[in-house]
Image (cartoon, rainbow, N blue to C red):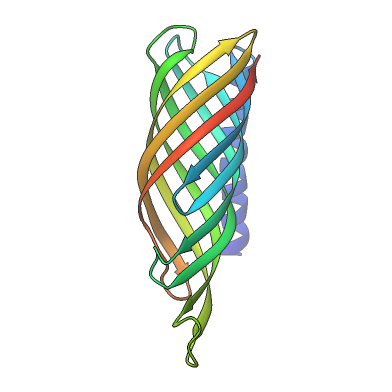
Length: 187
């Protein structure tokens, strides 16, 4: 019964936030973009929806896929895997019209699964599988180029990956630097 209530509560919360976000879309400027971010140990393609809330401010949501290749930069000699997740963020543009330079903060949640190995190539090689839930808060800066309602936006972000839930052996976490680009349309 508790599990059913938990799922119902989560679904209601998600639907409430989605309804609030989408209703504001009818009253302001909305950007729909594809986004790609690269970091030293992975790649993140995603779909992003941004909603202007004031002259200089906007909220955004992203759904994405996280392709992870920690190699030997995690806790094991080789860590690799993938997962799905989402982002919620807030931006401040320095010019009105939601273009030009901006800064913002966002937080990602990823549900990743990693396969790892230690003592690779040795007779006593060890391997395993770990499921993690990652919380990744970041600060982001970028520039929006706008032409005929088309958007191109290079970005740089810095933050931290925290493995808040781990099923299996611990795997890599820590500081993260991401370079990204968004291409989309403004409505």
